[in-house]
Length: 476
Image (tube, rainbow, N blue to C red; front, side):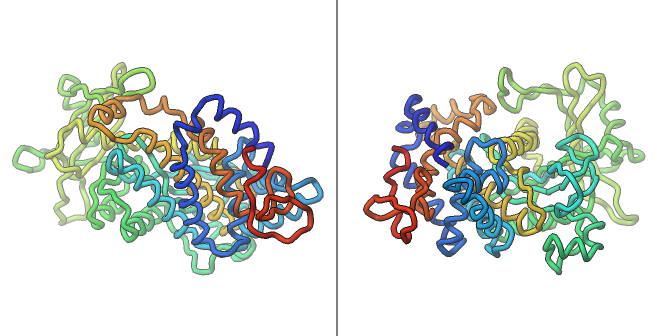
């Protein structure tokens, strides 16, 4: 680990960001945050294993799987095997609560995010984890938007929360295909719980939403892509939870348009047919936020509609939002929403467009923290790895959000008008990497710099029993 965190201290000092972005109060926040996680894990061994694992995830290593993390955490090649075995046991075999750990991280980050602006939406999405072979839990040939094609992969459904400036994934649920659920031998080998039954991605999404409501996560609007928005049962389930939604649908989905009195007009037509019948002159330009180099704007139209359901049942009225981008020969995006009409069109568009930042969060989780680097095959191992990644990401998002406190109205206006993609994730990661190492090292049985056992008086000797760790070697 000395190879990972030693150079970063010089980098931080050269930039001057240690004093300006992570002062003594920031170090205190680090201690409180990771001590809270340690309290949930319980036991010195689990705390030490989590510390090693988290520091590996936050390192600049290209691979964030157990083997390279263990190699960097060990004193030498002779100790790498034992370290690998210890970390593998922590991830694959221990029974700490993924829900409690993820919830702690989510609440911590949300509290920091809401100091700038309230949570505007929950986003349901899914992502793929490309794999080789057929033994990793849940893997099979299936479509994944991450690759844009059918591939050999795992697929996980995610729940994220979003404010005007930040996007935080708080939960993932692994999709288990029927081929896995119906194969007792594969289930046993991958340690799939005996009570697990086949659940569609829509059902996994509903369960995560229900869990978030029970946990008191803030948010009243659910956003999703057309795979979820096309499902009327899913939209109805969201409404039954007391939530509004803004979900993409297919151009071929049929519905009635309504007149000013709420009466159906003619026969059901597809969303695309309705858009073309409206005509391009009806569409108006709206800007929803500042992009990297320009304002993001397009043309939109909003119509009140009803979507057919069971015979004899009068469906509730919804709104169809249609986007016709500049330069396009026809409308390209269609959304159904129950957002109250008391909101302006611009407000509705801004909320619905929050969904598109999910891909950026996926890129950060995978590219910087190794979300898809787990090489184990077990069901508990996959979930523990994801939990550790989410916890690390939650702290980084909280620090990034806190870098722009709403101390004055003018400052808030400046922050909101700033280009969100220009604040790169690696900057915040480099800023806090060393501080996280210095905080987590107190959980380790050996000094990560000299790899000797640590003593309260600062002496580092081989083979001596572990007592209160020292920070003598770290960051000096």
